[in-house]
Structure formats: C-alpha cells, structure tokens
Length: 431
Image (cartoon, rainbow, N blue to C red; front, side):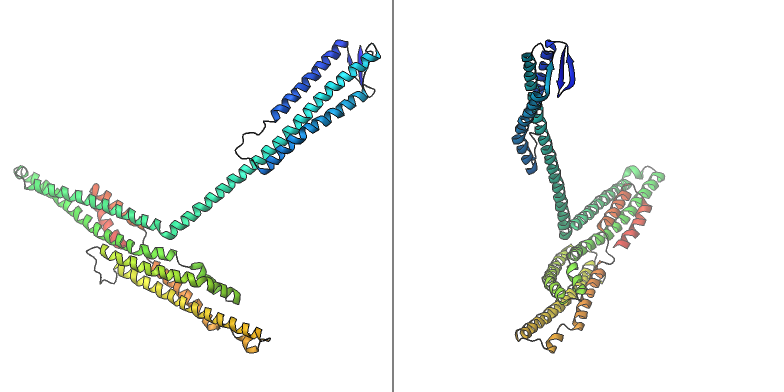
C-alpha cells in the first residue's frame, strides 16, 4: 500500500505502483483536455459581423495574458507539489521522490493548461458580450435614425401637400367611375327606347308595351338623378381643387415664429431674436401666398360649365377672397415686424453711443420699444391666425366626396332610386 499525503495530511491510499501510473495517466488526460479547451477558446466569438473596440481590446488582452497566467499557475502547482506532495511506503526513497516529481509535473501541466484555457475563454466571452452590446446599440441607433427619417419624410410630405393631391385624385377617380356608371345607364335607357319603338314590342300587346314603358321611365328617372349627382359632385370636386392650395399654404405658415413674437415681450433680447427669426419666415410665407394665387388662376380653366363665376359662393372666388385675407394679414404682420426691428436697432444704436460716451443718460435708459407698438404687433399676429381659421372653416374632406361618389355609383348599378334621392341631397350639402 502506498500512502499519498499533502503537507503531512493523508490524501489518498494507492494499492500499488500501477495505481500511481494510472494516476499519472489520468492527470495527463486532464492536461490534454485543458490544452484542447485552450485551442477551442481561441475560436470563441470569431466570425461576428460587429466587432466592438472593447471586444477587440478584451480579445487582445486574453490572447496576451492567458498563456502567462497558465505558465504562472503551472509553476505554482509545481512548487506546491514538490514542497508538499509525498509518497510513503513506495519501496525506497528514490522511488518516493520519483513518484512525487512525476505527479507534480503532470498536475502542474494540467493546472497550467486549464488556467490558460479558462482565462482565454473568459476574455473571449466578455469580448462577445461587448460585441453583442455594440451590435444592439447599432441596431437601436439604426432604428432611431429610421424613425427620424420616417418622421422627416412624413413632415416633408405634409408640407408639400402630397396627401391633399392624393385625396383629390381619389375624388376625381370616383367621379370618373360615377360618369362611367351613368353612361352605362343612359345606354340601357337608349336601348329600351329603341326596343320600345320596335315592331316586336308594338305587336306584343298592351301589357308588353306598358312593361317596357314603365321600365324605360324608371331608367330615365335614375339617369336624371345620376346627372344631378354628377353635377353636384363636379362642384364638390372643384371646391376641393380650389381649397387644396390654401390648405397647403396654411400648413406652411410660420406658426412658431409668430407665436414667439407675442411670448417674447418680457425680454428685449428674446424679442430681438424672435423678430430676427420671424422676418425671413414671414417674407417666405408671403412669397408662397403669391405662388398660391398663381395656382388658383390655373384652376379657372377647370371650372364646371354650370358654375357662374359671378356667383358669390363660387369656390374659386371664395378661395381667392380667403387667400387675399391671409396675405393681407401677414403683410400687416411683416410691416409691424419691420417697424419693431427698426425701433430695436435704433435703441441698440443709441445705447452703443451712450456707452461709448462713458455714461448712459436717463433719456437713453428709458428709450426703447413703445409698448403700443408691441401690442399692435401681437394684434396683427392674432388677426393673421384668425384669417387662417376663417379660411379653413367649412372645408370638406376629399375622402367624404369619394365615399359619396362611390355610394352613387353603387346605387346606379343596382338601380336603387331611394339611395339616389338621398345622395342628391347629400351632394348638394357638400357642394
């Protein structure tokens, strides 16, 4: 029996020298597994699409220090083994020391291999976590940029009025479909009149003639209702065309800039900054208003033939009137802003002169913007907002006209006279 002790403490009892050999084989297998794990740890986290700076640093740190950590652990294990490991009853002192050295070397190799493998695997795992964190940040950043781009695209589409033009196109498409259904119904009426005048029906007796006459009158009535719907729908669509430039103009108004003029009265510097910011925006808005007037002039050729241009309720005349009110209101705002800017510049010049003279006189201290002028500026801004709200009052939505026209087309197709009567009244309310 061979006793194995560590620093005088019995650790194991081995049956013979063969057991020591088997112990050496087991320790060698553990060392081999450690070296295999060290090799596998080199490939941990490789092939990732995103490699962060922190991950690269951790990989380099593990690559550099894990072998050193393995060597250090191996030396420590070898020293502990040689100092404290003893075999008793091994037959001779030389045999006991031979077993001690062999087991200490094999155990130190296993300890060094596993220490290096664990250090390298730990650094690689931390590097993989850092890469995943960086990848997640990039994904979130990309999603945020995509959301910002989407919001900017929607804002640009809103300001350009693409949705308004799309709504009008839908209404025009519905009006065209209604015209097609009405033309088909009139063809049916023409065919019935021709058949009623044919010899076949005339010779078929009074009952057949009465049936065809009643059917022809019913189709004629529905066709008349359809023409009324088409007339009112053309007016409604023309009104949408006339209000589309106004609605697009209202969206582009300098709302924040003019609102800041009224809220900056408490601070001279804030008022100066608000005036400097509002002046170019109001001028640009007035340029847009003049372009809107040109766009309204183009619509003159699209006026339905049954609309009287001299009628006060003419959609184009009303749109021009509302545009004139908006333009006048913002022209007054610009004029008042110019006056306030001049007074602020004059006041700043007076203060500079007084400061250069070495003393600020009482008259220069109290000189500044007249409070009544600021009140007039705020009043002009309020009047401009009122003009915009009046311009939008009573406006109709394009999808309402489209839905009404779709109902009219369906009523013509299924010969629903009652729905047509209701729809004529609804279209008159819209127009």
